[in-house]
Image (cartoon, rainbow, N blue to C red; front, side, top):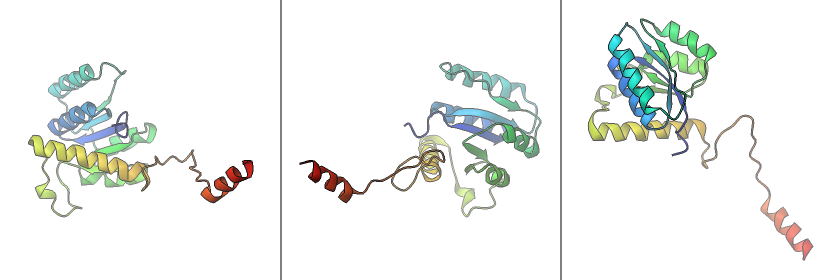
Length: 171
């Protein structure tokens, strides 16, 4: 899936959730660039080491924000570009400011209906998570015809009638 590989992500929340999301997105081919938790955790640092082992084909050195809050995360994201933000509803203003999508996960999610029924556990929850993240990337980074949106590149569609006229003139 070329559309999701090498996307840089920032993840914030509880340590167990952050490391779980970091593991699954790295298995999807994304790069967990910034990991932010609100406490100090030696176990979390050890778990990040296991992600580094999974990502041995790339030079992976994430920015780890321990004992940090959203203000610290926002300051880091001012200087480091990421493609997706994972976390709860409090990250919406950061995502808007950086013009990146927010995948809402964790607690609280107060700006969506039915958030209490969102599950990312087990096979069904895992495949639903992969589908939702992939569709979010398609919606945000691709146009309705499947072309990648790129500010630097302009897609030019030629007029078929003009092309046919040039072909007829040659013969």
